[in-house]
Length: 321
Image (cartoon, rainbow, N blue to C red):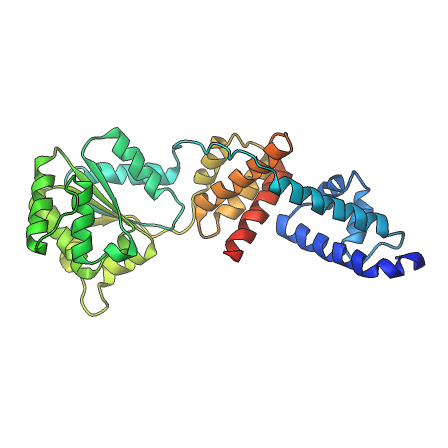
């Protein structure tokens, strides 16, 4: 910093602090950032963003400020959200659909894997391929017997059901018996109570329907341990479970990248990096949506910088939320 810039120290240090934080958030390289600042020399930019540049820093600080303003302008410009790719096959969805084929033979199965790994999309795809596939997505308030009966009957075509639990269960069993090779998929099944699980086992036994329980790792604990005081041996004998897994396979990440037409190796690596966080491919998809909007605002094809900025923006918003 030169002597004539002493009075601007506060402004310069503010820009430097933001610049350092921005680089850490986006994981962008100094050469990439130097382009953003108007094709400045990357060595000069790295010095400014490090311990300080020995030459005039005011032009660099002003370049950083212009870059910040361009980001604000871009983020406040209305851009249509990009189309998210339709269903695409991953290793995880292949495994889930194979398990649902087994379920279709009148079996009980469970899929206790992390959020954002493709459970719901696999269920929707299976329902498109075959008739009599019923998907119930439970709210936390619907895990107990009464709300569970109502939610399931609603999906089976009986809205606003009421009555004693035994009568409601008989109605569910009747509907399932009358369908050809039915599969009842209960999503967010970690919300179920032990009584709810036992009731569902009864539906499977008495109707011959296939029943699939989809949930996160808590579902695995619930099935294996019950309340902690009482186990569920009858359910455990009847149910085929996928191993608990919280992160996507490498092939899942590659499939997501291909669905977005991303082939550049460093971009695929970035997608994989964010997909290992909680939220999996779902979180990575949000980042790709943001990156695509940023690219659209600049009227450019999506590149590594857009992706890095989209990841940083998405993660920052999730923390703030």
